Image (cartoon, rainbow, N blue to C red; front, side, top):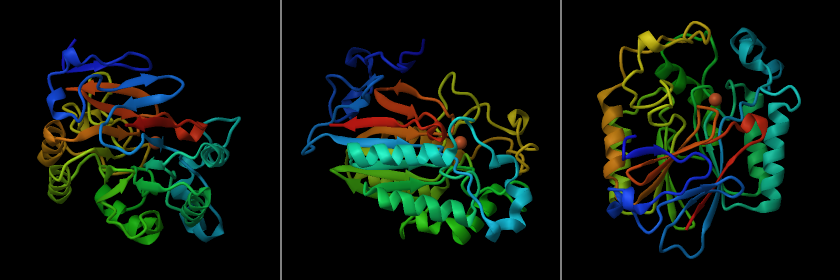
Length: 313
Ligand SMILES: [Fe+2]
């Protein structure tokens, strides 16, 4: 096993003695741990009180109405349910109902909130999140802006549908990269939903983390780790040859490899002092990995009612 990279899925504790990167972290006695009932715990000094975050990823809402009839063919495949006993809408409402009762400090929505950018999907999501009464932050996933069979590259479709439909989800923030501090923790919301980040996003990340921590990086697609497959960011095996779904999803085939900037972004997270966690979704399964003492997590599938609870502090 690589000493800097080992899986602590679901119960194992991290030992500072094996963490060469711990000197960069806010506290080194015990870097983080995962407990099946209470979630991911990230010790962090200097906060007034522990911050309770619910990461809600991949709700895959599938709502539409007659206003989007012209796109019926574009959303037909993604219009079904993930669980026959619980619709995506019911799962989302169940999560928000629990949040109303348990009052976490933040709902961190890390993409694929919706399965396609219909008006009904966006309006419903924003209305219900606002009505929940818990602060929420959003960054897009690859499905939020994707109408299957639509024209143009992924980057072009993302720009088009963010502009046309998704803007209410950002509340005036920059969809590609923004920062919000909640309870003393800065959340860096970076859109990597095309499997790449650009220079501007990389510089934003460097500048924000240079100001000091604690910071959490939130994005849809996780960084590559052993066992996490090719649907990852800064992945050495990602590329046209490993893109199995481009015809099914009716989108542009992946490029030969991800951009150099994306690999630089990965390295930048290793060097970012004060970064305490990287929280992503996309894989539809819970996993937590320690990489040099930094917690990298993927949230479970919110479309079936699950969230990743994260306590910082
Ligand atoms: Fe998803």
